[in-house]
Amino acid sequence: MSTHDTRDELKVSTRLIYDEMIAQNIPVTIISASSNLLEYTDARKTDHLLFSTCSDKSSAAGKAIADSKIKTTHIAESLNVSMPATIACRDIREARKFLAEHPAVVVKPSLGSGGGGVSTNIQTEDELRHAYDYAKNYSHLVVVQQHIVGDDVRLLVVGGKFCSAVIRKPAHVVGDGIHSTEELIHDANASLSRNDDSRSSLMHINQHAARRFLGEAIRGIPLAGEEVRVVGPANVSLGGSLHEATQLVTPEMITDAEAITKKLGLGICGVDMMWDRKTNRQYLIEVNATPGIDIHNDPFSNTSSDAVARYVQWLAK
Image (cartoon, rainbow, N blue to C red; front, side, top):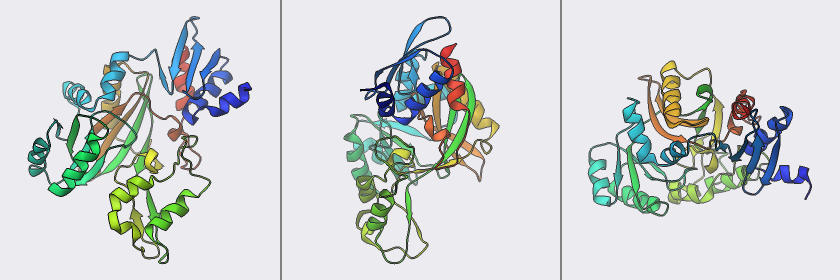
């Protein structure tokens, strides 16, 4: 396989980093394109590994903590960073008790990413039972969290400093008064701008997640111009959309994002918050130690930043 072909097999975030390293004359080798694994040499002539977007220059302990939603809450508490009320459950009875104390909750596995196993805006015990069983498919420990209404914001921190932000919106379709929601999802997924292999940031709407979220309503026919939300979480991996927000986020959000990233010792970090604009309060939801950097430079969503160049400069120091 040629070097060019191998490079094209990298997923988009790793490919952007690889291309920037070439542009900055940094020695870099693709160890495995299918695993998104690179080896590069920094300015001190030290070899490093990079997997996806995570380098061995970041703290291994910090990454392990970021991968655990419960451990992340402990770090947030130590920094006085606001989070929704959160508990870890090994038994659904604990989840029922928590639901009784909150109008709505989010149920998710303690480990995992990409929105897998996540159910939002759970309000009834029947919904809770299904959501709990769904999360258990992904992790033996289930996290139940107070549901916060607001904007889903991803802040990107590079080298300890805030770089850019996007607002993520759950996948939706727009009715035409003729086709069912299920047919509209199929048509949306047929668009050349969507894919299912992470080679662009606009991914196929996850049909399993849509059927689970909508139930029988997926067969309904929305009115012409009616916008229909088709999945719960706003994750891009489920078909969610991106919207530029670098100039919108507040100084308090930036301070919190930088603080938790530095505490974890991560060179790059995606910090997810829910932002209640009515009260102007932000709530940390979770932290991602291998964030997609491509979503901050996405032509389909009109997002733009110097995140890739800045991160490569940090990697090469």
